[in-house]
Length: 519
Image: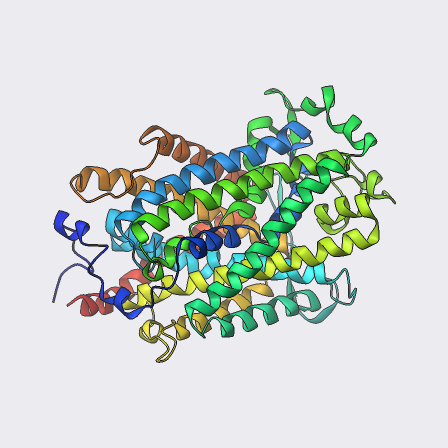
């Protein structure tokens, strides 16, 4: 019996990662460049871009900083994607980021990523997007609401820790998260019927939502400008409250500097741009992965970030940034207090009236549905890869005999996501997710440096653009954001950190099974 879960890879083994994989031979290579790029874009574009600008604007209270938050997110996302492109081309294996961490930093780190992905990152993101789907469906059926409880289990009591008030979260089944659960169940079942079926659905819905975003930008340029909003948001007002010495209220009367406020604001924008790495989870099913994975990452993230920044300029051109929660009109409420934070719906309603708002709500639901599909399809491949290594329940490694999809993995993911759907609101869920996401992005990009040193002779069909400067800048910026979130959003970040740390004893419980699997 071996003494390690997985021995450090030799240079020759690294060179053969793309060619010799029993687990990849079990999977069907059915995803070309178009489908891979659609998976990148479709996993990124969910409901966030249509919602989170309201919360960001309340945190930064500046048009320039609203755009700045999205520009920073764009920089981090594209730099991260360029770095992951090198890892994906080297190791085009099912499981993606789990494999990169396992091979660069060791099996413990790979397991901690897969553990956190399952408990918080992937399933929490699916749950948040599903809840947002229910939020927008409530426009047509008001009975679908976060306040319409079917069963209310518990309200987490509030308590003070220094200047912060923690707790206060409702846990239970309401009509809004019931819709989210139904979406998760339906899409999980659909994805059993082959990766081609999942990819077909992904391509259709991604095309629809990219068209919706592009339409929003074009309509905004030619038809959506509002004189009152332009006067309030641009000119000298654009730079209001954006100086280095400006102070910002991030809730509860807590005042922070401009840089700290921007870091806190990254929760919403990074969440909206996240999941671009999901295509790496499906690497075992991508045709010509050494070419198509890096290219799909670069193309997909570039297009989506351009659309996101464009959308926020359109928001500023249609509605004033500043508003009042008690306002009776769209203009009075502004971006900051758009009803239910539905900024995009408010903007289209401002342009075209109530019909326009309802059309946008439909487009957002299409977007969320497609995003959930991509996340469900991709996430199940990570738990499958872990199970193949003996680091997850053994049955999760089983494929459907006819469709060659990880059916048990899909079902396990479905059940846990449904539980998360009843554990909080949309904002609660995205706050839980983003801290843990950044921790593992930092570790994975650090792993790129490790592999460059320990396996300098390994075959690299693509090398990260801007290495080593851009990856170092990414690590520094992401570390700053995580430290700020630990300080100012402890009710969300500390639970995420605790979940990561709890994975350490769990790993050592699973380890004997992993050793058996590797023998």
